[in-house]
View 1: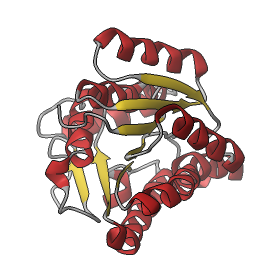
View 2: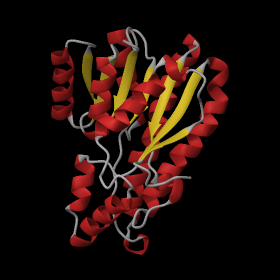
View 3: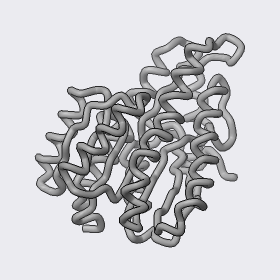
View 4: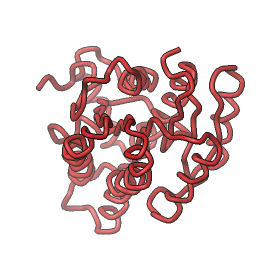
Length: 254
């Protein structure tokens, strides 16, 4: 097992890509902290990990948009497992609509969940990783942040910010043997995708159009994104940092 005796925090770990990532990391032997505001779902994922018979898991109820709660969550993980080796930022939210029709309230929600939560978790975890002289930080962005996406102007901007932040962080932390990389999924079959599809007939058409434009003609499975996260969390990626990797079925090739 590639991650035996390692401890990972997975934000947004209660569903979608986060859930798949938590399970995949545990199957490689990692202890996993499922950090999510959705308490009941986080508990279910914790129980799934326990049932697998591999790594241990705890559910950490937390509002990732609130710095104080994030700091308390990190301390809980340290008390439970004694160390944090891996941070995976999977939490995200979006609403499809033309920018001209969007509201400042929506902007704030998208920016806070998709970008500011990453700042909170990284700031809380870094001192521990720097002191230990090792760590893996994997941020889940989106191909929308690399090339833009219709009706996702603010979301694209937030994910682009995650990419730029991660590259700078990689430069600042390499001296501490900390790797920082980004995974950019394309369209992925998650509860968020289904919620966006159900928004309106227009959003349903956009989802279908993106899938049609994907060379493999399907959305990704969350497990396919999780596999890349496991690679970046393992020793196999020790000489990789500051990289942005698309897992999009060929939707983008730049």
